[in-house]
Image (cartoon, rainbow, N blue to C red; front, side, top):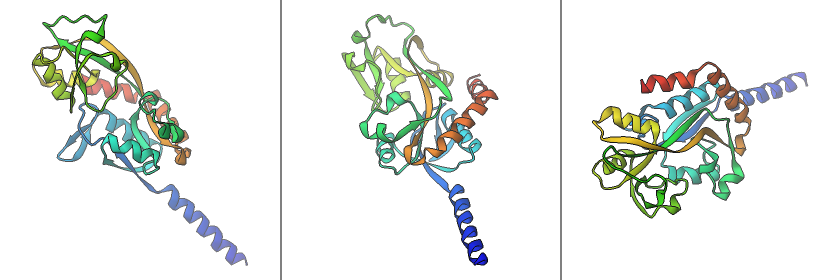
Length: 238
């Protein structure tokens, strides 16, 4: 009997060990968005989102493998339980009822600003955004965009900024870091006219694996205390 009990206990603990060592397949960005995500020849080459997400999961002792998946497919895959972690998210961006039922968010690990960008020689009336012709990212939602009277949708941020440079739109709404990266790489005639919005950035955890949330939050707190996130941002943008 003792040998039988030992065998059962050994099987149980081996099962737990195997479960804890599982590698989660985690969907991630399918297109570059420098300096947040950098993809070259189909491979992830870094970027702030990639660096921070990977560091947090590693610090939390979560084994993972990132693979590219378009955002439109990622959202459905998450609420169906096909993916258990996503990054980089904000509760205000994930408001489908099916998402709300199953999602939990980590504490924030960074803050992003969207800014209104226009040409240096362009005067736009910022007190009434409804009269501005905006170039925006197709598939994205923006606060108050239902009040914008004229919008041109484009597929990527570089195209959006070039569209404004060519004076085909009055202004664009883009991430502050993306604009800084663009300005560093190009002889740009664009300037930041105004801050548009601020958003905290989180990791989203499916309720099926809510057990991961405590480890992820602990990792974020430790890395913040060490100054890891801000030091990394400063290094990317210096």
